[in-house]
Length: 330
Ligand code: ADP
Ligand code: MG
Image (cartoon, rainbow, N blue to C red):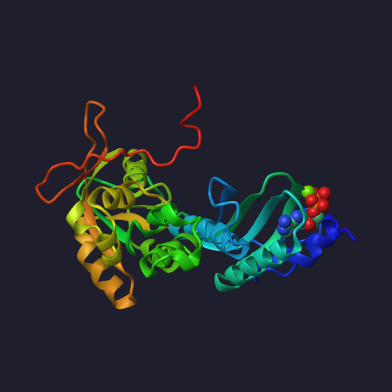
């Protein structure tokens, strides 16, 4: 017997996660949540398209985890608290094994990050997962891309390049992958939203972004948002040794500088506060690397972000991250 849209929603999408403030969740015409005085509402949306953002055959539990985590990462980059989310789900057919795995992955991730599914929409078509996350930030305190000033120091959390390296073997059978390759695939499906770091950064970062399109492209967004330039130093970039050992120099540069999907935070701190920030980060167990500096915007239409090699020469890398419409005429 067919399960039908409404039973499907009840069976798989009720009681996913838990968050304070929910007055009415899944089941009415719209969700109602309480907002608190002294806080601003923060919203972010990310869509994953099968065949573009993940292989058609990818494990549903992992897709759900990734879909939620990339949204959570946007909240980390704002220093905001994620709370309530809606799910726009387009399915080619009803495959209950797939739905069961998907809702399990979604529930586990929502529990882990204390947010709750409060509504959505379910339609038929090519597989597409769109999550809109809502939450809050202390009024006037959300981290933006626009506050970096010349002299500020540039930092990144975690390490770079593994998720991008995974794209080369995402479609392969797990049992055919070596340990370092499996590690990269884990990083791709389970990016770590740096929520604690983001909230802490509200104290002193002048600008922040999460790295979804690639370090150069995203540092470039801070540069253009702030009207400055960014100079990065290749020697200072945090890179897992397994990646250094297994990629050619060109592939490594491309994964670290232009590869997306790391979802680490890139941010700037005024120089006068940088030592105190580094000390505090160590005390809190946050992994940060100082990777560059903010400079005055280059004149004459030059690139506003560059990465220098150990001889001080700019590394040639395309700065633009992934553009879904790059192949279409204007
Ligand atoms: P309406 O026709 O009023 O838009 P729907 O039939 O689309 O209502 O949805 C019924 C209820 O189920 C709503 O509360 C909606 O938010 C929720 N819902 C629909 N699809 C999903 C989903 N994929 N995940 C969570 N909630 C969903
Ligand atoms: Mg609807």
